[in-house]
Length: 161
Image (cartoon, rainbow, N blue to C red; front, side, top):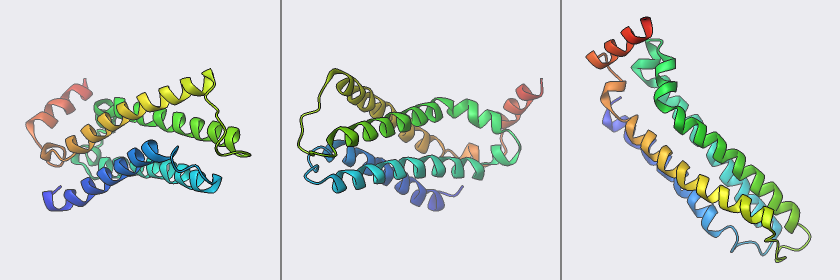
């Protein structure tokens, strides 16, 4: 992929990360009305789905995918895929739990032990997600994923065994 065509995709991926970071940082401060917090949570979850879609679209654009080595791509990026899906589940779980506890009274104190643990797991998952997603976005800009090379031929030979 040419650098000029990959740059907008990279900016889109960074924007999706920024939206997620913004919602994680400020959603509790913007809980005056349930609808505001619900919309923020929906935006965050939709951005996570879009982030996964963008990564897979970039996968489909690689020479490796077009050569039929889908397993190689999955193997190289399986940690990112697992972390992203786990983080999505943690986000949805936290959002549903928070909204169900706060729906009647948005300013209600809900920090019981279970919710606090879920909150911590979601935030730790967020840090892992930011790291692995950004690393994947930058690694997929590597030209060797988009052209035939000795590295790819060696990987193809490993798969053939």
